[in-house]
Amino acid sequence: MKRHQRTHFVFLNLGHFIDHLLMLVFATAAALTLAREWGMSYAELIPYATPGFVAFGLFSLPAGWLADKWSREGMMLVFFFGIGMSAIATALAQSPLQMAFGLFAIGVFGAIYHPVGIPLVIQGYMKTGLRIAVNGVFGNLGVAVAALLTGYLVDQSGWRSAFIWPGLVTIVIGAGYAILVGRGRSEGASTDAGGASPENATAGEMQLGRHLLIRVFAIVFFSTAIGSLVFQSTTFTLPKIFEERLGDLAVSATLIGWYAFVVFAIASMGQLVVGYLVDRFSIKTVFVAVAIFQVIFFLAMIGRVGNVALLVAIAFMLVVFGQIPINDVLVGRITKSEWRSRAYGLRYVIGFTVMASAVPMVAWIYARWSSDALFIVLAAAGAGILIAVVMLPRQLAAKA
Image (cartoon, rainbow, N blue to C red; front, side):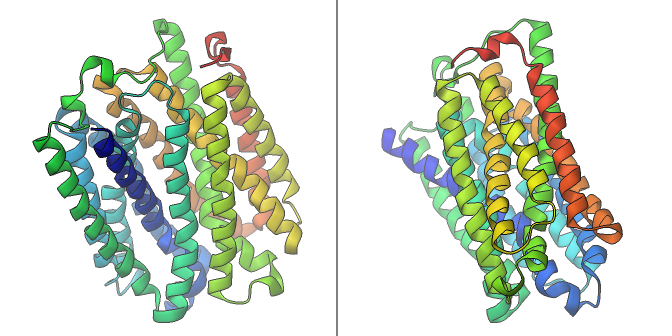
């Protein structure tokens, strides 16, 4: 049973890695080669990513509903095979419009992961911060590898291979997950919600009155929305920011991808630190500290170039990634297993729908000003998160 759970956790982590990788292949390809190949500016091309990010948000809620009503493991199978085949199909695009359709399909299947995978990650565990953080690290490594792998494949064999190879690997992983699920059900070791006993379904549920519950959900959803805008703006634009600000440090697509990978990989460790802290200290205190550092580091990025820009980028990405497990832990603590996927689905509908708005926002800012203006906007967003988090109820100031 424990071996099955450990293997299942590995597959869930791989799914998170793939989800974020495939959602960001286009961001690097657009910045480094597609804009030139299709005779468009970066600002003109990146809005074609919007349908994918809209789908990534809107389809989270029906995915969560299906997982609660049908099968979380079954939905994970749909995720692996669907997003893998969609990535391969996107490689066939001959125009920006066809690319938009391909990215939309990736977004539809990519939407499955978070409302389905995260509840499976915390199923049966009381202290969930570190598990969510480890899973989050894999997601952020997917973000990091997207820039590195896409940059490398673009240099070696063109942008189409950057969609084809990850798509093929995803289908192979999906086949392995299908075998694991089949064996688990035959051995009675399934981790699916439908087979979980009430005591195993508990993930440290916190009992709050109705008014406090509404208040916490409102704050979670607000901080999710603003945090998603910040996350998407930074992860999507980092290759472009490095192209502008690193100068002679980044003279090829591969090098730009490598620097982005290093920043994202180091920043991923922020999730592990925050996950550890929220399992042992006040989640409200940790959240306030993360929000304060976001404001400080975004303002510090204004006007920075060269090595200093690289160091500040590491700093602000550490706290951007560090916020991610906090909201997931909060949702896990205040929801019951039988409706947890729908709660996560709603959280991610809000988050990923706002993420979709980040792409046209970045295009609008770049068309009129510069990346310095973007960092002013992000600092203001961090201040908004801080104000909201201060209003969390006193019950959340206690240790886990």
